[in-house]
Length: 224
Image (cartoon, rainbow, N blue to C red; front, side):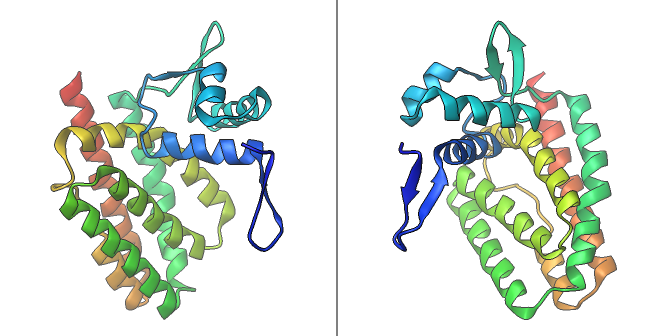
């Protein structure tokens, strides 16, 4: 991987350390790196075809965000989520994500709702096909697109870090039980957005968050 990639417009792309960071972040977020799975600088340099410096920088950032954890003796791994961790994540998500949905209602445009509807349609298609990874990608995209509308970068950054904590475990649960019974309240959220009903949007988002985290908790309980 070159330090910067030249785009079709002739402008340099992101530097190598940013590309490595985004790649590893997605691997954690969408569960391609499993809970408890160790990673090494040497292994990542070989897998990604980059030097040690961008890998070290990416690992440093992801560790600071809680997506990875030092285990000692220079070992780094994806943290394993305990059932009690789920309760704390649920408290944090219920405090923040409904508020972001509420704020989005104040500024949402019809074109935004159309985009979110398309994203939710791709999510539904992934569920029908049993495509776990695509479900995770589209589910995250739906929430990210909605939260971006809220124009609340501090809250959004906090949510981003929370998602890194439960993403790998969500992939494990989906892998065990498939996509057919995955709950979401996205249709209710879209209806609330269309009606410009902030209270309903917040309520639907809270329901979506609670259902998702309860599914992770139940899945982890079965693995204990």
